[in-house]
Image 1: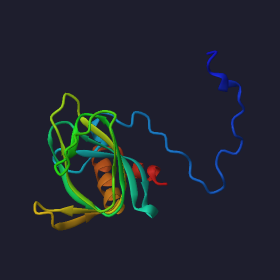
Image 2 (image 1 turned 135 degrees about the vertical axis):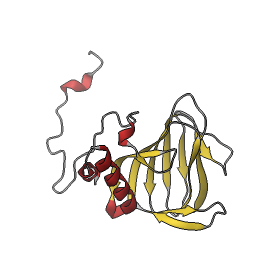
Image 3 (image 1 turned 30 degrees about the vertical axis):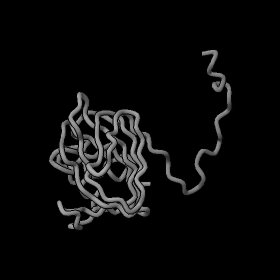
Image 4 (image 1 turned 180 degrees about the vertical axis):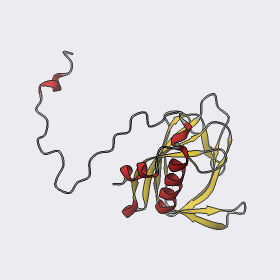
Length: 173
């Protein structure tokens, strides 16, 4: 413990300013327990980690246990992604993300998200500012998905699997 010099430091007394929300701590965020993943497609599910209705924003772990199409979408806002395991990418790009890869998606991008065959499940943490505009096979808009759709998807799923719809409310910031 000699290298942990900080153990003698005094913690900050006023951690949160008045009105500030507490931190969010989620143990085992990238769990393999499928109950935590609300289905986004027949091949992929999303585990919410952070939800901001006022910013139309969410952070999640997206998981696909096998190869498959996740979705095709356009986003008018930026997205950040970090690959935890597996392999994934966009049909429109020449890269394939694997463990440890980080991606910035600029506003104004349309793409087809796929999970590739891999010995490990595809697990990616995404930080999304919505909405997402769903696209058909011709790249034409055919629906939207924003934070309120995400909240409903997660609440419905968590109620169905016994976690409880109100769990989602704990993630609001």
